[in-house]
Image (cartoon, rainbow, N blue to C red):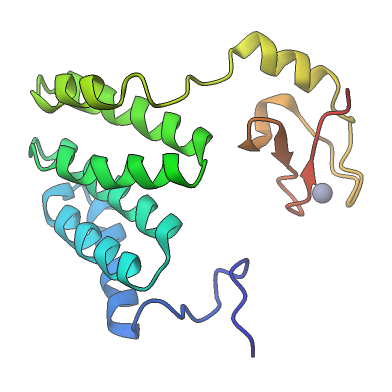
Length: 180
Ligand SMILES: [Zn+2]
């Protein structure tokens, strides 16, 4: 069966089965409020994905590692945030970059960590600002009331933005762009 990136149950070609288990373990640790143990696992697997030429997935795992380090008050958060943001910016994942940047800044600031200032200094000017809410509201006003593919109602509060101009049907995953 060919590898299908959209199928979460598909075998992961970039991670060995043992690494896949490590990833599940790290997510479990995070859920159980053990970020200090989860962070180095995410960091290691991010390296594996980088080497496997999966830069976008590597960026996500570096970001996970950064957040887990931040939550365990470990300044290594900054070391993980750098590759995460650099990769996201390089691959034009603006939405992801700004969401991650804002969340990490919040976590670092909340704990009075010095990485907060360093992060702002290094990336504050580079990370695109999120789209203002009123602009989003204007876009949402132009959305169809139902998904054109499966007919599910599109409620403003429940839609998922996949990039600045596209939302995704929560039921069938069809990308929908508000019409001008
Ligand atoms: Zn749909």
